[in-house]
Length: 80
Image (tube, helix red, strand yellow):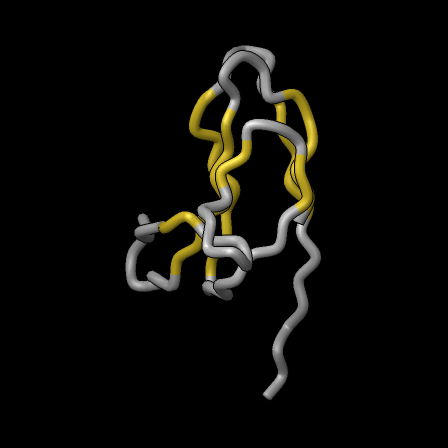
């Protein structure tokens, strides 16, 4: 995953996941990197996450009027 863009003043983004498909408003949790740290970024970064939830979203949690972020992910389907 790659996070780029303008974070603005105090800009922050969490990468979140959920397996809650039973609701129109799923409950999300912050994903972790391989070292077990929550994936919360305040600057451009590349990252790998450990979990593989059904739903994944970037969630901008802070910033100002100039905050404009792009998150790109490479995903693959696990065929069993």
